Image 1 (cartoon, rainbow, N blue to C red):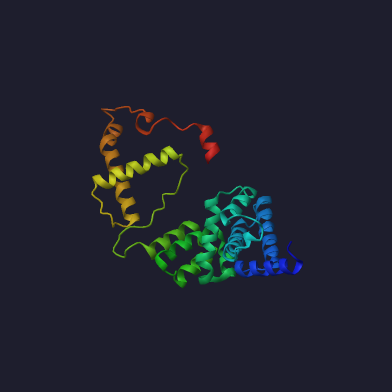
Image 2 (cartoon, rainbow, N blue to C red):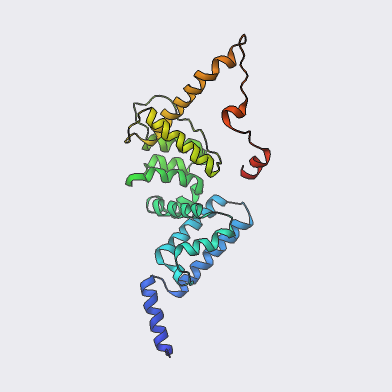
Amino acid sequence: MTTEAESKALEVAANDIIGIDSLTAAQLKERVDTLLREIGENEWQLGKKFVQLGNSLLKVRTTRAWENWRFASFGAYIDSIRGEINRGRTQLYSTISVAEKLLPIVGEEKLEQMGITKANELKKSTNDGKTPSEELVNKALDPKVGVQELRAEVFRETKQPETDRGVYWDLGGFFVTQDERDEIKRAFDVATTVLNIKPDTPEHIKRKEITIAMCREFLSTYEKPVNDEDDVVEVEADQILGQPIEPEYLESNG
């Protein structure tokens, strides 16, 4: 039977390994639980709250505080909390990644000031070990600079060669099912082969070339019949794009 002194010694030894004492772990858990409750209850200042949550979850992971709370792994702890704010693992890990990449660069106060959406965009400038310029950080902090404008600036600083012509165009994102994702990926793989795009081609250039090629192919096939008033060829939408999207789908996935 373990004595009280032996139990205390085991607890101290465990905390030395984990890197956090029981009191601090309890305070950290209370902080995370409070943020989860505030995020779940209202939409006010969500950008700032998610940054704070990411900062706290990073501390949980770094100090292995989840072991104090009897979880088998950090992933198991994340699974236990994601339902409280109706977010998936990917979104929660994304907030942690933002904190991990940007805290050493901009600090906690500025990170909270820019909010999670802009912080996610700024994080892209840290790929390959790079550090965002002071000008880029200031744009992320500027409330007059929108997310799309910041995204364009990040793209310009990290990827767009100075010799490229044109302006940044954000095509936006959309929801897809797994089958639709697989179909799009197959189409891009085929286009990569047909267009003989080299493996070392930057991803943004690859996407541009494939998108333009697909547009040209579609236009060469259908533009003249559609625009020629003397020789109108009617083409059913579902013959080209598949079955039309039902309103229920849009409502449940929009």
